[in-house]
Image (cartoon, rainbow, N blue to C red):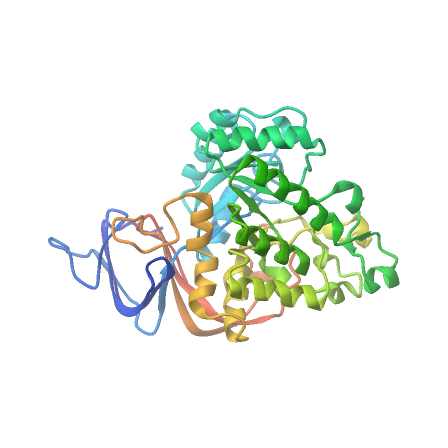
Length: 428
């Protein structure tokens, strides 16, 4: 890490969707804060200068869903290993779900995570608190105390709250305390330990399947509760066309909802598990081509607000069993930005939309000051060489988890610098 009280980034193409900015200019940073844009502030004498000519200067990425595995599963990843991986990929803020071990259901666990993040000194990390005690779906957590400890929202992770009365009360309590509820929509009775989309590929391979309704029925139920309680809610990891349609209709009806999609859902389909490729075992499962295209359209139209990594690093053995017995999830920090830029290259969305979906929008959903290059904001910045071409290889993955189906994929656009709170934490 290189620390500099005053840093000048000059001649870069500054792209900041939050401020509708896309222009070649200079950026001035003092003591970790952006103090000038284009015009040099008084008494500014840079100790370090980065020439960003022919480079993009964008807000540091904000990832809405990254399981860092610590505390509890350090053999899969640690806060240090995963925040290092994040900064090599331009991610300056990570949001961790509450399903750590122990669960994030009391302030002491939040404080433990914050302390470990501070000691690591790489990316910023914010946490979601548990919606119910120990994520068991029976008793409400101490929501106010979790918010006071710094939690930016509440979630029950992948643990569905089966009792709708408990869910309604949780939403009422969260609404009272102005806390966003994050929902991973899944009807556990319908998904029933499935591992693949309920379609021709799962049928041919003899894999236990997950129908659309596992997601859509859960979304429908939650939307009714949201309408009744007026809670602010965010739906994580949409996977199918009908889900996009439902969220879009809910927004049109005036509900305070938002949604994200994991980057891999925008590029992979059920066809990618054809050879029992366990690297493509994810939950929610990869759906069909029509769903993938609908998710892409959802990003383009704004029905889906953000793209996340849904980062889930695993040890090698976790993906070596027969497909249904392997652990779901992709090590995805290092492909969040490349895949988002690939959508631009394939003319699915424009560059501003892509950057907005991985910076400003996620920060807005979390209610944090990040994802923008406004004057007086924290200097969390990513500098990209848009012309650099590279290939994802196992040996250049920094995450402790090497489980990804994107090995061998070629990408255009590479992170050259990542700056967190004014400090250069990565230079490529």
